[in-house]
Amino acid sequence: MPTEERPLRVAEWDALLSERLISLSRPEPLRLRLDLTGGPCAEERVRDLVARESRCCSFFTFTTTPGKGLVRLDISVDQLHEAVLDALAARTTAGSGEQR
Image (cartoon, helix red, strand yellow):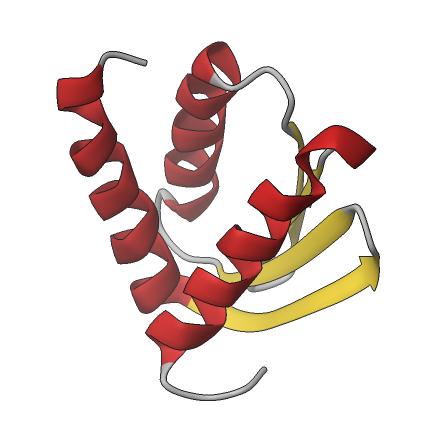
């Protein structure tokens, strides 16, 4: 991803998570699970952001699962990128203002 686009993408993730994050869990060391509130266009918004992130950061594997009133987003990485997932989890928890 071009350097000038990075702050914008981070801001998009921060906005999505601050608006929609219901819960965060770490079912496995290399997987982060985010449950986001559903609603109009929520799934499309998540899928669009995930698609763009996948193009620049191929080490992420995203699985989006819609449910009743929520969108579940599983984010996985390989062992080499575990620290990136750790940082994402820490950023998400810190930005929420509470433990999830």
